[in-house]
Length: 74
Image (cartoon, one colour):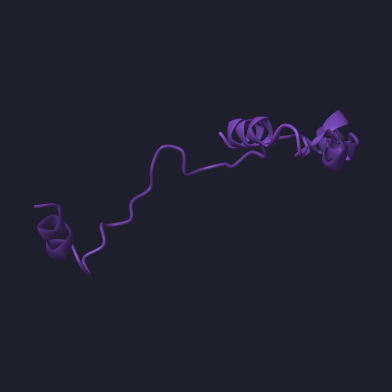
């Protein structure tokens, strides 16, 4: 049904009419506001060293290592 509706309207765009908001566009921000400096935030996570925090497999506990890896992937 939906495809049929689209097919019937193909190549017949609706008439373009003026709406009540056609006149006058206003910028979202004033010129004064646009001069205020915009500083990009650098979060504390941007410099994290994940290699140091990654668990490593030991010969004594290989199953615990696998458990930790599968838990981290979730």
